[in-house]
Length: 270
Image (cartoon, rainbow, N blue to C red; front, side):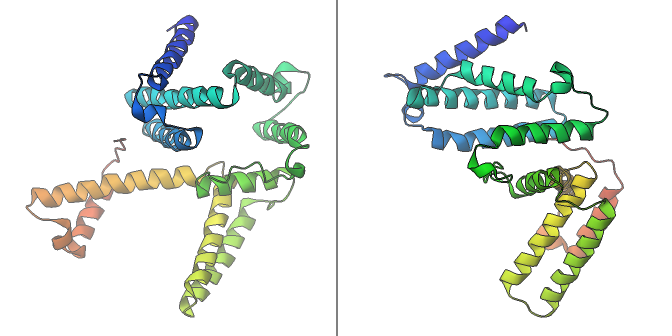
């Protein structure tokens, strides 16, 4: 598909939304607001991320279309409410990307990905210095999923030097937090204290992932997809034998689980 086709497709999508919002349009679409649409925007973004994780080309194409529709729908609503201009938003992000890549569009020289990220953080901090009193963590969205937000918060803090020196130090901190969690659990600590200590463990694990160039969000996503695949295989095998999981017993399910673990994992999105 050519660039012209892409632009035409977006224009047709705007026209479609206008029809849905028009006088003879859809009753549901006509009552939507930016506040209600944002929830669908987030949902479609996660469905796209799941399709990407699964390597599902057909699913990626479908979910990308769904996400673009929500972006167009939200833009249409904001044009109605605040006369927001998509053209100005596109020009703004283009200008910002050029400004944040001085090693491509300027005379800055970089030797590593780490240096690119440091420069990016420095430029971004300069851009935001007049907003939110220049506070470093205020620009991290509060409605990000907790693991993703924890990663972004610690990444921002690390960008100004508030960080461990190496991954070994993070592991030491993890051991310390695990000891505190165990102590809270063994001494019949309150649910609040156990929750606090568990949160500290999870936050430290997020940082451990970051030190290895990973995200705890993606690691947990892959593990949950793997768990679903393996549990489904156990359930299918039990039913093939005329049994149900809740009556099969832990020993039987554990035996099948060990058997399934030896098989290659095939992760697919729904």
